[in-house]
Image (cartoon, helix red, strand yellow):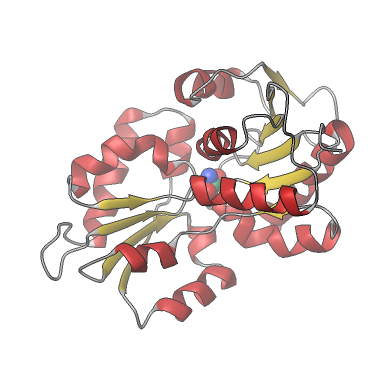
Length: 274
Ligand code: DGL
């Protein structure tokens, strides 16, 4: 089974940031990346909708691509559906992502931390429990960023700039002095791609925390435990999406650290996924 691919999915192009980290950590693995672009963004939809999409995408990846493991490269889908996915596929190595609050607490000196993510993620029970477990250790400024992932999907630079400014202003004052926010948690996998824009508002001293590398390390651990780690081979990558592939194609050309082997759309090939 070690030669089968790892499935990776997100509502759209954001999970490419996690795919970059996975390819770095696991150079011999094959990956099938599914962008649910026909239904993106997930972040302002209801939980039930996101859970239903996540389950359909997981089934598609298992049936059509025979994946040996699944990485949910989306904080929103993890918050809404990771429990269902684990229940549906108890034997499948499964890795989700969540806003990295714990590493932020460990790194912050001022004890003031901003967390930006989608509304579905931040209003989920999973996030509330995580926040409650750490609330005594830091002052978290939690800001739902409606529209930001969508603007990144569309590469709408003007909107990205306006929303970044609005949401970081809402978080408070950034800097390293007492009382200032010195750590910014990127709680959506789309946001690492706009780090330069975010830094224009947060400044140079603020530490940005995303989850690509730890997710990749956890994937390696699970595959190794299951005896399914690929140790030879070139690590081909196929990108699949549920709408016309142009946006994914353009995002991959811009953001993947190494090119993918193929970009394709699943619309015509399966009724359940479109
Ligand atoms: N990239 C996603 C996340 O990490 C979701 C963005 C969206 O679809 O709203 O939450």
